[in-house]
Image 1 (cartoon, one colour):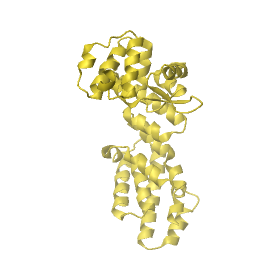
Image 2 (cartoon, rainbow, N blue to C red):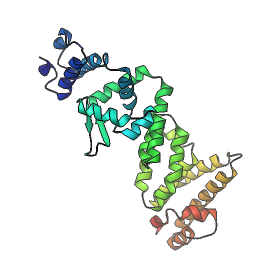
Image 3 (cartoon, one colour):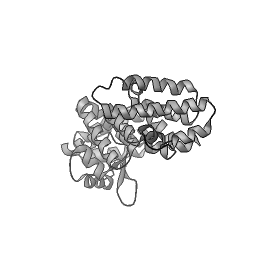
Image 4 (cartoon, one colour):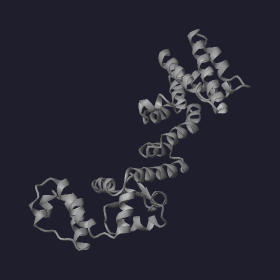
Length: 288
């Protein structure tokens, strides 16, 4: 009956096995459910979780914010030691966890199970606690040079300043190594309202539009918005000076392009000796 109700899904059968292992009851309620897999599985998972030790439940629920898991990452998110042992144990007991490599470094929760855990997370933790989990994940990913994942978790944790700083720290390197599509992908992670209020994001947009020779309106609009924000930076003279130099550099390049002088663009982009030249040198390959 259970096989029929779960349409033979291994997830449903595994949940049943765990229910019995932890002492739950597969009563007539499960057998009488309509053959909607999600309802059956949710029922069985609830049966399992009513018997799982609290520390295991806490671990599972908190790490459900992650798409893939490692011992070190989970240690950082849950603020514990020994997560690798938990993950290996979950695999050994067929608890909806799959090892993704032979070394046992990375793991994955079954998508249905992860979905259930995330719904449970929303009921067990408040918004600030969930944000903190995402921010810990973001810090871990940033320290391991997985910037895009760090960005995603920073934004999920409502840490907009942290997300903007990640882009600010890496945008010139991406432009200099012709990784504009990657930078564009990062910018698309931000709401339009946020992008419009952050000069580093606006200047990233302007550089991409300039180098790819999109319409001048896109470039100039981003520069005008960035200019207005820089003029409001009281008490941030060093940052304002650097951003102003970048704005001036892009405006100069746009004017040179408008004058149909590509050699002038290259000369400007390689000119040493001032703040503007320092920032212009980043995307110069795309201007050649």
